[in-house]
Length: 339
Image 1: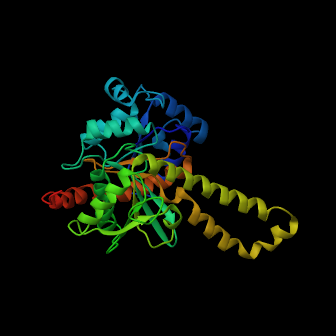
Image 2 (image 1 turned 90 degrees about the vertical axis):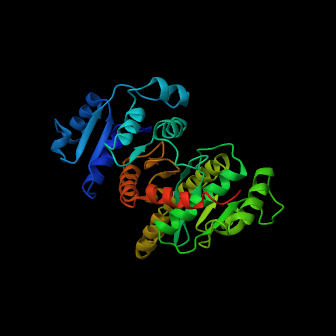
Image 3 (image 1 turned 180 degrees about the vertical axis):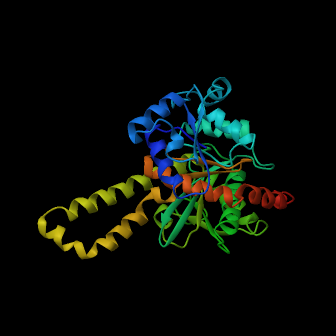
């Protein structure tokens, strides 16, 4: 199930049409049916979305949660919004995974209130995969919780540890705490207290805690996941995205600077394309919302058709992997550990 975003509905539709050719699942577009059908006609010259694929469906709703809406009020009062409708369909098992590029605060509120947290979870977390040296890097939390306690960061490390072991088959994932220095005494009160708690409890939770990690070392390929509060994580995430765009733009401009540089780069094009693909966060799809009872994926608010395409493919794998059930089972095993 798919909804929302700055570029909806056009980017959402195009991403779904691209993805449906490569996945086994049905895709339900949740939104105003008249607007979606109008776009289908304009883009594909089809009167009905089923003419494109019998695996594409529309679920009509009449309301929209805007970016400026107060999340709690929007979830309570906009009952026919695509987000509320999507969560209700998920709860009724009429969908296996819900993807939204809409209001992050409303997504967090809706997932917590309507879908519910896994038993024992204090705060769910947005957990994107980022490009790193020869592997991916999991970031937990990337914006769901701007104010955290040390227990939250310990639980974020637990999420990452379980997910990377069980879904990515990483035997002993290295998990670090994002900080301004590697020394134990560095950081604000939250980070220093979180360091102590992670160091104390990592053996009990079977977490390979490697200590503090500076931002410049996060992408070394030696770290599998970094944990932090959502405020810091969101700044980190958007800085990485912005720097990736800068590198890509600067590389293209320099290669096209003059005729000789353009000709000289031709033999290196395969390597350049591989490098560009590695740096592109779109390749990693959306961010998993870990800690809630059903599979929920947060797509980037400014997602274009390609990012929706990658996110839909990722979401199918997320649902097929039974990641939520595995997380529930493993978290339940750890509930007897004293904090």
